[in-house]
Length: 226
Image (cartoon, rainbow, N blue to C red):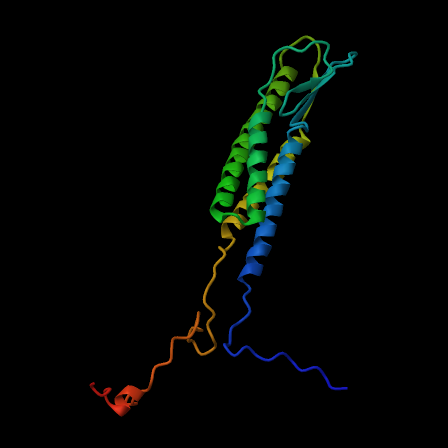
């Protein structure tokens, strides 16, 4: 049984194009990173950003948990409120998700990078505000412990899971934005053979007689006059 013959080499010497494959792999990585960042941002907005507990000897005390959308507490009465960060986080998640879709569809690298950069900026700004609020809440609880009251007050504070998740989402968003901006554009170039001369494109030009050749009309002379 005869062994199969290897494929004949391309006479033009063209190399297989790997630009589309590289663009597709980078676009998929960028879309995955941006989509994970968007989902993590939305999930973190419903998780506790800060948790604190106040108790006194002989009293049950109460616990307070703050999310991006409000306050959850088991205190007998609640006074005042906290700023909500859910809206800017939702905008950031929406922009990152839109950038992921644009990157995956390879519609426009510039548009995908712009959406990703704006979403990352929204997330960075909201995350900074959340971090500063968490520090303020920690100071507030500690000041109540040393308030100079007649009875002892014990407090415990912790940074909530939502704050840490927002930090992870920001790292993913930054990585996804960088990869989206580095994704190469789709280009269509003429095939170049191995000797450096571009391959002809389109039908060949009409053949011309070589210099010095006699055409039939010149060989027999002009037609006789009548």
